[in-house]
Length: 340
Image 1 (cartoon, rainbow, N blue to C red):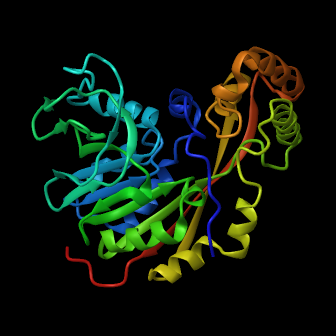
Image 2 (cartoon, rainbow, N blue to C red; image 1 turned 45 degrees about the vertical axis):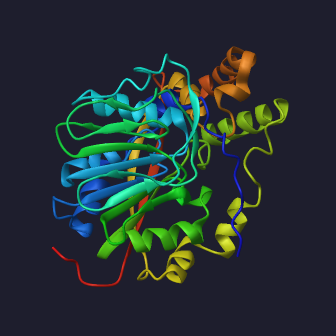
């Protein structure tokens, strides 16, 4: 069954808002995931469609190396900056005059310790000059490449700008793959087959999720959702996200996709966390979405904020709106015996 195709630019310009206003996965969920996946401490973590590293960074303490992969250039820029706060980070413009170039990393192989990875047919804006830019011990950027590796206090973090389906890695070279709030936007069958091949025998794939603040049953959530729908219609943004995406997931669930790829049956684990939002945080969260990002709000952003405040303010208590957020992950295992 063919997956729904999503526009490649849905999250363009959202990275800073994504990093500031998306909720962190709770420690209880991450601890449970680590317990069940049982990483060796010397393996590789692959975070696909990583955003700004909402899973890569809190999980990196259990791995020797982390790959954080996202198709959106801005997301990778934030990952590099965050990783650089604990180590060394490249100035991608060094030697390149600061101009972004459309680059294709076609078969540009880069050594990454155990196993070798490469990015195939990836077009992205990269500001690098000719030759190689030295960015510190054990890492480099070659002309045309779209990845930068940086070192921090824990794992070796490699930020890669690529679509998940365009990534190539050695077989059986990854202990754990995580995908946060994104599997529905990927070509699921293709990505599931790729992930199965990249995982070590006994390795795991975790599909991680969280509920959205406008999708709940509370009165303020219903009012919030109505504001968003009204503004999507006003700005001509109702078709940015395919309407058939959720229907496809109901008729062809993620678990069935993983089963077809060869995974053992996935098991879902859920965690409920109470969260208090300010109205400003909700406005920022909206700007992190694919349906009302800054590029869509445009010069009407202040008008949107005013409308949002006017509608939601009556529901606030001490300046906050409270909800119970459901975080969850589905853990699927590649058959076989783990090497460690």
